[in-house]
Length: 91
Image 1 (cartoon, rainbow, N blue to C red):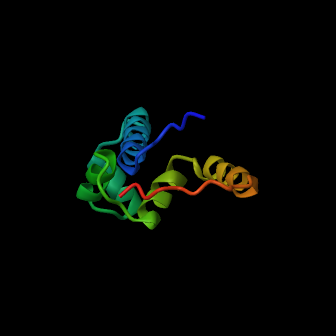
Image 2 (spheres, rainbow, N blue to C red):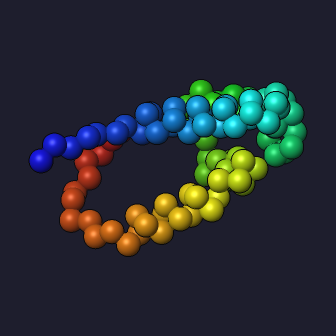
Image 3 (spheres, rainbow, N blue to C red):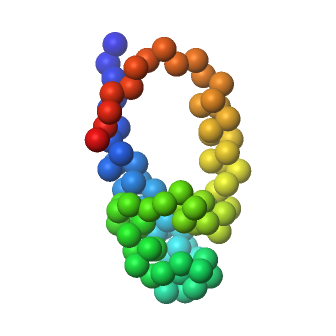
């Protein structure tokens, strides 16, 4: 069996890329998005660059970009799958 290992850094970069693409599609600057979400510009920049972000800020972005339903549906699917695999630490 071949395992595809995905790192936390790769996931952060993917989230950042999606956020940047969604922001640009709405023709918003980082400053404008930050103001709309009551966040700092540097928080938006850090998320887009794949740097650390807290869950609340990520969920604010997901809500703004109308992604919460998709995220919730994905979590429901994950929650119903049996898992007998021991997951190694990715840190």
